[in-house]
Image (tube, rainbow, N blue to C red):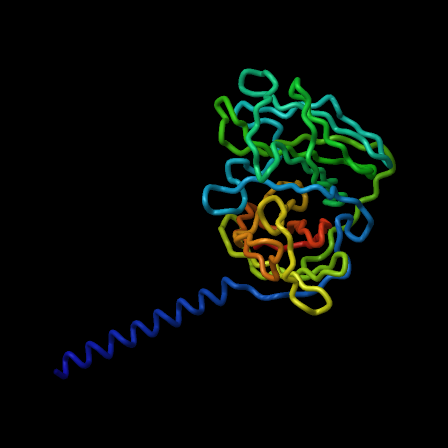
Length: 307
C-alpha cells in the first residue's frame, strides 16, 4: 500500500508539471499587444484609394493561411504558367489600366479559371516602399487578356501580382501567385516604413493584432475590431469571409495571403477574427486588412515584426 501511494503521488506530481509546462507554452504563443502607431494607412500616412470591390486569395488545404503552392509571388513563372505583359511603364497621377495575360505550359493564353472566393482573378499592386496598395479584380477578354483598372499611381517602382487557380490543364486546382515589376516615371520619393505596432486606425475603427508569428511556422493570429472603445459586431461577409488579410515583406515585397478561420454567420461578424499566420521570412511585413461594414469596404495597414 505504501509503495502504491508513493507511485500515485509521483504520477500526480508529473501530471501537474506537464500541465504547467503546457500552460506556459500556450501563454507564450498567444503574444501580447504592443505599441500603437499614429501612421497607419496604405501610403504610410498619405492618401491612396483602394478598390471598393471584394477580393481574396487561396488557402492551403483545410488550414487557411499562406498558400505555400504559390511561393512568395516574386516570379512571373511557376509550374509552366507565366504572367506576361507589354506594360513596362505606366503614367503617374491618373487612373490607368494594366493589361496582362496568363499563359500555360503550352504557351497559349489561359482562359479557364476557377472561382476563388467568388472571383476568377485577384490582382494586387504595391510600390517598392510598400505604399499605394491596391487590391482589385481585373476584367477578362475572350482572348485571355486581363485588364486591371488601377487608381492613380505615384512615381516609382511597382510590383503587380496576379493570384489565380486554373480550372483546366496541368495546373487545374492549383493556386498560383505570379508578379512582374514596372516603372511609373517621375520624381520618386521613398516613404519610410512605419515602425512595427499592434494597433492602427482607419475610418474611425481601431484594429488590434495579437500574436507573435515566427518565420516559417504556422502560428495563430487574432485581429480585433472596435469603434469608439466598443467591440464591433456588425462586420459583413466579404468574399465568403469577414476580412481579407494580405502581407508584403519589407525589402523584396514578397507576397503572403492569410484569411480568418472564423465561421461566417450573417452580418454580425466580429469583434475577434482568428487567422493562421505562416510568413516564410523574418523581418517587417506590411499588413493590409480589408473588412466591410454598412456596405463600405475599409482598408487598414500596419507593420508586423516577424521573428
